[in-house]
Image 1 (tube, helix red, strand yellow):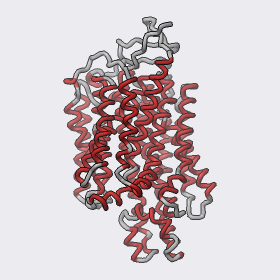
Image 2 (spheres, helix red, strand yellow; image 1 turned 180 degrees about the vertical axis):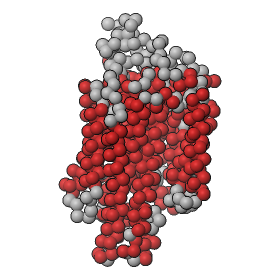
Image 3 (tube, helix red, strand yellow; image 1 turned 135 degrees about the vertical axis):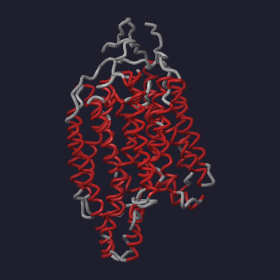
Image 4 (tube, helix red, strand yellow; image 1 turned 90 degrees about the vertical axis):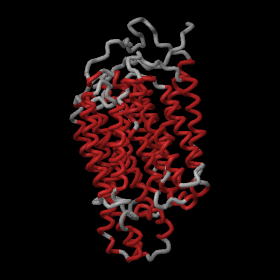
Length: 544
């Protein structure tokens, strides 16, 4: 990184040609050993992306069982959300540290923290211990979120990154979709395995990183003293305060409560001070130059909005399956598979197309048009929608989500220096996490508000079960209650869900429309076919 948010390009990195030859004539080896190392690392990144994303969504369906076993009925919200706080707030710091220490050491530390936190959470005998374990997990996950993108970018040229980012990021999407199903299933047997399962899965990439990730550590221009400690001291509590307000507002406290308003205001003020500090910092953790051109700025906006969209759909479509068509929690996960599998497939296809043609704007425009159409189709969902219809609706959404998930980061990096990969990826990861939080928050407010407005159509007993945010968890009982509640009353309840979910789908449609318009601000920049990095794999000497 250069000081004071300079936009100058690095001059001490040897360019590599498309054929793999540097200006010093060093040929990029293609030995079987190097290919093995490369794919071992890619597999490790995919596993890490999967398991860290899984822990974001696996907890909610298991919370009632966990609380019943170890207590903490008044602390349940922290069991789920301390992970989000810890993983989001430290991401810029991990990006900067990876520029100092290289990529391997922070990756090993992140995985180790995630494993330790998982073991602590799995063995917890109190809510306080579980929350502590989840916090340590979150710190590790924050590092993982940032580093898997950074490492992937270090391994392949910009034009090729879409293909490999698709593999890594799409598995994170699969995990987010499967989390509620796996969480509910394990909770029925032994909830502790929700956390213990992370240990053997993370052990594989930990070993692979230690054995195979022999990477360069850069030119050593930055030292530990250059870490933006002041910036992080401003950013971490400010982010935590904003997330606290978003998470507790409308659930633990009313939105009008000072307990929600005060942290939101303090957090926003803290961010403003942080941005001012970043302008003057010698080595900023979030350089303002990342947002100084319209392509990268638009890309970050698309990243945030697509994350809002992904989380909104992932959080509320299962409610449709459980409450409106009365499936079990596990069956709702199966019903969600068209989006899960479709996103994975179309992310891979988009990455291949990006690599072949080097043009990201048509992919972004087409992707958000598909999202817009899919969300529009979702507004038609009700208890009479045929299975074939809602599967088609899901596939339409999957085309859009998959096409954008793997192609936004390469577009952002196309407008930036290769030396900005770490800080740019950290900003990308943070805005993605922040978008997830906003997706749940805004959609939940719309959903709960619409539920409350329509409660007069059902009996007082069910009003108490549905009002003030209770409708979301009530949905999981749909498969059982639909067979025992009076048919007329149940149809009224289903009607409330249909109308409330429709407000969510209209919101998602609006997000898709804004995203499509934002694509127009991107420039069609050339994607380099040269691997131009200080942090790539140290190649084994070729014997040929």
